[in-house]
Figure 1 (cartoon, rainbow, N blue to C red):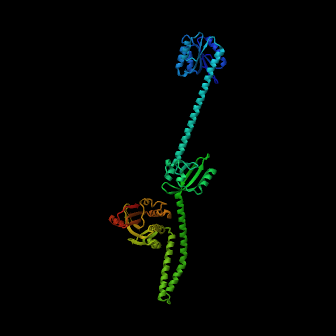
Figure 2: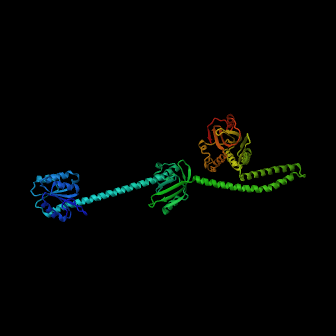
Figure 3: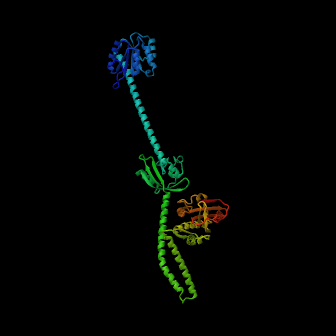
Length: 540
């Protein structure tokens, strides 16, 4: 056993410091305490004892009261002044009889017990063993506390990292354009990202804690009980839902629902497919119209053959010498009607047969064809037609698509006057002073219900319609695209007054030629709409 210095502590042994200026006493203490199996450290002076204390974890200090340089009481005072040793057990050994006042002084100095000489080995070992075991338990408890603090720190760091991950994921979910929500099986909203707020109009603070499907007036493709049952059984469901926004608009969303393993939360990812469905419906309508156009073209082509034969026969009949004046008059009427039928079939074929290269197109003739097709609608709606062609421009283009533009504009004007009114169609030359070019302006003017200022801003947007469910919202958008292909422009002005409303759609098509003066152009521009004192909405 090492007698001097600081030994290493194998296993769980503790250190016992023995302080006495007589080596023989130290040897006797060592023999007595050897049975405890602890580390025994000896010091013959107070200075040596303090050096050992500063370098070693000491469980018990066994010291003599009477020492030459510093007695036991003074050494105990010095030890107790250090924060590390305020609870270190100190046992005094005295070879002389101590009075009660001496013992009180020792207890004040920090002693925990006294042992008188001659020393009884069993008593010394018992007293030292108690403090040794207490120190060992304290050290074990300290290690457990340290381990517990380390585990708590590790767990806290793990939770912090998880919270950071959750926060990062939540931020990423918040950046998603889809509406991402989390709700309880009962429908109570627990998470509401910015995509959901943008789609439906309710903020996160307003929606949390609310029954989201009740607030959104969700219409399920199947009974809601069946959807919830599928979620419980298969943990997922997907389908299209019809919902209401905060502004009262109706949206169709493609929704995917997923339930967690615990069954206490449902994740819903919804994507707005309203515009997609409208586009698909518009495509179906376009394909249907195209098919109808092909059929009409085929029928018109087949009618032309017997029509020509009937026309020739009538010509022969009309000029036969056996006919009297009355019969010849009826033959003339029949020939005129046949010519009208022939004209209609040629128009139908021209709508179907698109030219592959731009050809000269007379704008007045094209407008007359369109108005002739709308003649029945104008008559049934009691609409008075006023035409004013101040010029007869010819543009290089495709007749079919130009007819589509003016059919759409005239058709819209007719629909805007269900109770009758006036339809004005004018053609005149004009100058685009912004781009310094000559052109032709075709104006379609109606005295219908007019256009709201808030609707005018969205008039040429795809899928926007003022006709509720009757229109696809693509007519004006397509028309503007066609006009822009000719480097032209399509604009709208609408006036509402106490005496009525007027709406004018203005198509500008550029042509080559000399420019006129700004004063003349200003005079022409005023002819588009009546001179009324009213607010004007213009869409360019």
